Image (cartoon, rainbow, N blue to C red; front, side):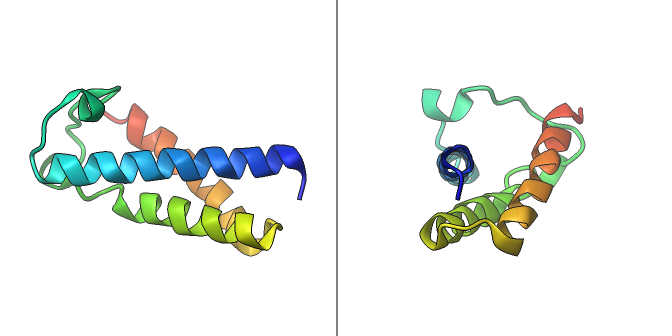
Length: 94
């Protein structure tokens, strides 16, 4: 695997892990600076905002770990790349 792709999957893994931990803390109503970094309330996911990104977080963590372990992108890596625009969509929606 190309070293830049490896760095990209490490970045996706770290971001997904951070976001998963942040979502867990937010779900349990723990409020601190770690949670409030770049976070804003959304209208589109009103009662389920704490749970909407769990599937994307899980895919990012488990999928990136498997891709890094196998040292090749494969179908799983392509699925992770396809899921990246969903993050942008979630951020841009009101």
